[in-house]
Length: 306
Image 1 (cartoon, helix red, strand yellow):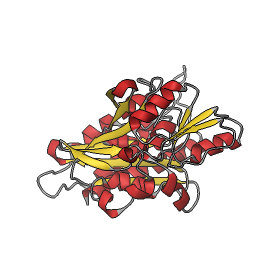
Image 2: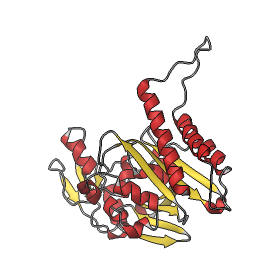
Image 3: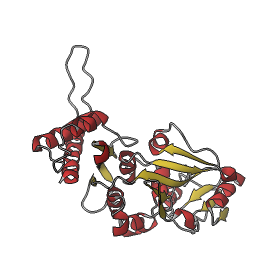
């Protein structure tokens, strides 16, 4: 999936404004097509792309459809890691066999929206669109996933997903996200999100918590409240020391509450004191968001440890 890819899924249908459509069957063919047509936009499901076209924000001169590239629509095991194709749909990741592999990502996929979005939207599209509310993003951040980027002439390079989302290492011309590589921790993982309405919807806040028993660690990422997922590293290290890893991974309830507040304060800090030493109050809406993050983090860790 390319950086300009405005779509979150797979389709061969193209908006009428596009002058040409190319439908490669391999990742390298797709990269070659993009290199030959620098103005082309890679497209998978078209959910985000069509919204941009319909609103007049985008008028693609050409499209490179990714829906026929079978190599990026599955996954495989590789040295204790899962190598996930960027074309995996949310619906496919939400199935029980995938949930047994990466539970938090499966939960995020199931929460991605109504069936028509889950059936079209893809993992690579979620990453390439880089929308703050992307449900997969905090899970990928907590799992410290890396991206396998396909480039011209069969070139491949690997970058942390966090680097792409933060703009530290961007996709270059003609490159596509081919695969997502993440460790198989074989330990509890939880994804929770709060929406502004009942039922599937865009996240107001989301939290992914992943346990790493081998390293006696806790990984947490908070999504939707900032341009990219936030990792409260100090809160992770603090709570990991309070878990009794040798006796059922137990923890006192008070520590769960404190962890939630620690995460929320780290991600939504208090305002900087004024020159006279007074501390301004956070607006009510921001305070409510901070309480929401605290509740999600507390519940997520509690479920992971239960």
